[in-house]
Structure formats: structure tokens, C-alpha cells
Image 1 (cartoon, one colour):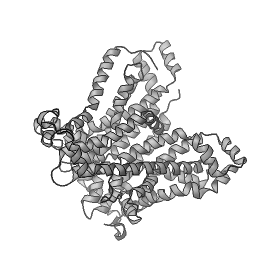
Image 2 (tube, rainbow over the protein chains, first blue to last red):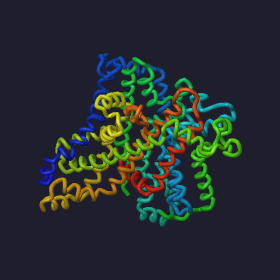
Image 3 (cartoon, chains in turn brown, purple):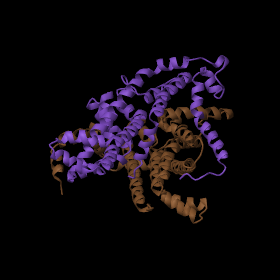
Length: 284
Length: 278
């Protein structure tokens, strides 16, 4: 069913939709379709592609460095998601209570988010190399060092962002429910685990989703902090894909196949997340 | 929830200490930007005093080596232009999608949702080739690319807001003889103001700091953004001039802090609005 105004609006599609749709075609639809097609071909430029079927995908999943990057990324995502969310929730919980200086602390915690990944990477490289130089080592001493360096960096960066979302969630929490709990004599621990956390599920799922996809897609910080050194042991998925494309001649097809695998993983997480969000929500 | 806290003094002290620690990495870069090259890597934690102090030399060298001033200018051009174009075009498109709501509009909406879950690596190679072929490897070409690749989130947030606007006002305006563009720009757009600010903030934070997209699409001989300039300085060949790098890092942080101080309220509002469930 379409309203009368809807009909007159529809006639204006050229002005209202064409600019966005044209740019969307150039910036997304066309590269996406070409990207999917290229993952089944061998190519060095878009015009010289030759169909090779699933060979690229086979090479991608048998590439030990790709599998290493995949597991490292999964591990990284799990660690940063758990730590960031617990810390951010705790900080938000403390700051929504009457506490002196909470506004100032909140501003400080949020600050690192606004700085770009490349710059953050070099800031932490300076700090970590400065600390590690006491033992005559650097952040590129081994993949383990690089991994924990990135974990620290990303937690430092993301906690403030998630804190803002949690604070917004806590502030819109219905106060009558909390008052009722207090009247009934619930301890603050009971209130937290039986009332606040269940009511905060929408914020918790949003933040988990943001930290998980953020962890999977992380590129700039990885490039700046370790650049995969030593010998690609601290290389994560996005960086591995980038270097397959631009670092190894003749592997462009494999790089594109890896990118498709990467897309499928991220898309699956997004869809699963969406299902969970709509199911877990508790009405106040 | 303004319930009282036990041991408030203790918590305030703890958070004050953690806040100082939180700022320490940035503080460390600032003090090192005033130090001599050699003492940056040898005595990272010492203060810039005595012979180590070099004043603003590092800044001068950093600006000279990376052409940071013009990189700053290009970053402003790219960000402001792209954000303006995104706000204008996607708000119009979102309104059309919500009000027309036919098969075409619905499938467009699904496409924009797909855009939100596709990582950049998926499209980077074809996109950089397309940008080269179409001559979009300039800062103004990037406006179009950002409008295309960043459309998903904006359209999604705008459609959510437009659905909550009362349609009767628009109908009344059109019955009174207002044209469709006049109805949109005179009535709908002013009502969308808070969401326009939120989308502007989210897109600014993304585009200002974005590295890989401009790195792959821009003609780097002519144009660099600030992130690219920093990466060039560090990732180039030969030994790295740590002094110049420190200067450039501080120069890259300053605009961000100015932006933060000016727009803190809107940043919080933007992030909260962007955290709507997908």
C-alpha cells in the first residue's frame, strides 16, 4: 500500500536516490561483485583474469601463514573482547554512581578512540620499546610480544568507547525496578547480577559485537606496531590479506580468495549476533 | 541511578591514578618530541632537559620531511567534503526509501545493510583499480568513494530516525502545495538535526583517521592524508628519524584533541546513537 505523498515522492527518485546509488555502485556494488569474481581467477590486473575455479581457495586455506593469522586473530578477538567489555562495564558502573571527578575521568578514558590506528601504533611502539629496552629487547622480539602489545593497545583504545555505550545504557535503566529491589532488600551484588546485567543485555550485545568485529578487522594498529614482525608471527588476518595482494607477485587471486573467506567470517558473526540480540533482550 | 558509594575517596584516588596512567603514552610522545634523536630510543623515559633538549627542531624536521602542513590540509578537504556529501545524499536517499517503501526501496535498503558487514579488504583491490580508471584518485574523488563505501551505516541510521517522524506534517505541507524537495529540505531535514550531528561525528571519526582506503586510492605523489604522511615517514627506506616521527605524531594528535574539546557532547551523543542494534 502506498500513500498519496509516497507516489509523488517516488517520481523524484533521480534527485533523491541517484547520487547515493551511483556512488554506492562505484564504491561498493561493482568492487564487491568484481571481487567475488576475481577470487575464482588468476590475475595481476582486473583485465587479464583467467578462470581457475576453486584453486585460490584451496591455496588460501592450505597457506600456513594464513591459518596462523586466522588463529591469532581469533585468539586476539577473544582476549580483547572479554577484557574490554568487563573493564568498560565496570568503569561505566562506577561512573554512573555519585562519584567526584567521574566526568573528568570519563573524558580521559575516551580520548584514545579519536586518534587514528597508525598514530596509536607508533605511540605504543615508543612506549613498549622503551620498557623492553631494559632487557635489551623490542616489541618485535617474538610474535608473543607483538600479540600482547596489540592487546594492550586495542584495550586502551576501545575501553572508552564501550564505556560510553554502557553509561548510556545504565542511565536509561528504569529506576523503579532498582528501587523495588532495594525495598525488597536485595544486596548490591544481587542487584548487579540479577537486575542490572540482564537489563543491560542490549548494550552488552552491541558492545560485544563492536569489539568482535573490531578485533577481526584490525589493520592499522598491526601495521604500525609490528608490521607482522618477526617473520609474520604477529601478523593478523587483515594484514595477511593485504600483504598477499601487495607483497607477493602472482598471488593476487589467492589474496582475493582470502578476502572472501574473511568476509564470510565477519558476515557470519554479524548475522549470529543479530539473531542473539533479538532473542536475549529482556523487557523491563 | 544515583545511589551512594562506599569508600568513595578510595575509588576516586584509584581512578585518578588510572586516568593519569591512561594519558601516559600520549604524554611520553610529547616529552620525546622535544628530545634529541639518540636519546629518544636510548633514554625513552627521561625528561627533555640539558643536552637532550632540542626545542622545536623535531617539529621543523618532521614538517619538512613529510610536508605535514599540506597533509593536514588534504585531510581536512577529504573529511569535510566527504562528510558533507554523505549527510546530504544519504539523508535524501533514506527519506525516499522510507516514504516510497516499494520493492525497489526495500531491495536498496537490503543492499545498504550488506554494505555494513563487508570488510574493506574484500573490495580494496577492485576499488583501487576502479578509482584509478575513473580518475577518482584525488581528494574530491575520495568524496564519491566515501559516499559509496560509507553509505550503509548512514542510510541505516537515517531510516531508523525517519520512521519515527510524523508523516502527517509532510502530508499537510504537500497538500498545501509544497514541492517534494521543499518538503524535504524545509520540514524533514530540520527535524533530523540530532541524527545529522550523530552521523557527522561517526563519519568524521572514521574518515579523518582512515588509512588504507586513501592509501590505496589517492595519487600519493600529489596528495597525502596525515595518517599516510606518518606511515611514510616510518615505513620508508633507510633509518628512521625518531625525532621527526615524534614531532609528526604530536602534530597528528593536536587536531584530534581540539576536535574533542569542541565537540565532546556531540561525540558521546553520536556514539550512543550509532550503537543501535544492527
